[in-house]
Image 1 (cartoon, rainbow, N blue to C red):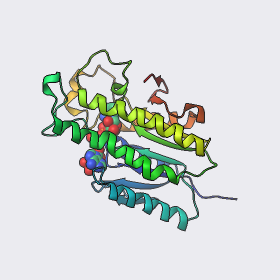
Image 2: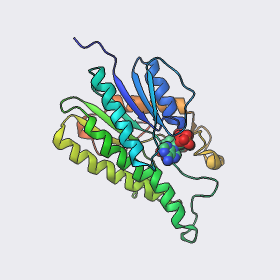
Image 3: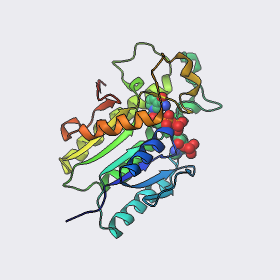
Length: 245
Ligand SMILES: NC(=O)c1ccc[n+]([C@@H]2O[C@H](COP(=O)([O-])OP(=O)(O)OC[C@H]3O[C@@H](n4cnc5c(N)ncnc54)[C@H](OP(=O)(O)O)[C@@H]3O)[C@@H](O)[C@H]2O)c1
């Protein structure tokens, strides 16, 4: 009988939400392979780490190779892959209020982290999924990436990067489902979470709607527990609600 604990890969685990999800998986007894661009001050015997940069495909390929080697040496298969990095603003990039504000540099930088990076992560990590086992790949997307839900406008580049991510998730779910009928590939909306990403916009958040990362992480992991292969390709919010594309 296999008595090994479940195994998760968390890609971008230096993010506020990724770190909280990693901590909660470790608290639940999981083994975690954590990949991040910046070192994370989180230490645990069951946490193995390596660097990854979404702007560098070689680093993503090497991270997948590291995960493959660990699984082979420990004779384990993967149970869960989380992609938790993302970008909304930087010192030089502000979410656009108008078409006038769009510029190519912001487009490229935000898409690199929110869309191109996750696509390359799927390219290199989805082949690690076992063929006959329920395994989940979940990427942190955002409700603002839903086209049908968009009533406010603005945030052109971020919205477009997450809408494109949602399409990539759907595509990868279709392709992976042909190989592994038990695989579940989904996007997740974490709610509005207190983090550097949301910091400049928190004054507009209604009372009680700004979550701690721990609360969101706990809710998201509970949502993942309920998913079935029929849910593959969809986007789910922190409360389990399915968000239409
Ligand atoms: N917070 C919210 O309210 C909210 C709402 C909806 C969706 N989300 C989504 O949830 C995810 C996590 O958000 P968060 O609030 O936890 O963000 P966060 O704390 O601001 O962290 C963002 C992360 O993205 C990483 N990153 C940026 N560029 C990277 C690159 N080139 N390669 C690898 N990693 C890179 C950063 O790495 P470094 O540590 O190296 O800088 C950082 O760990 C994002 O996808 C975000 O869009 C968040």
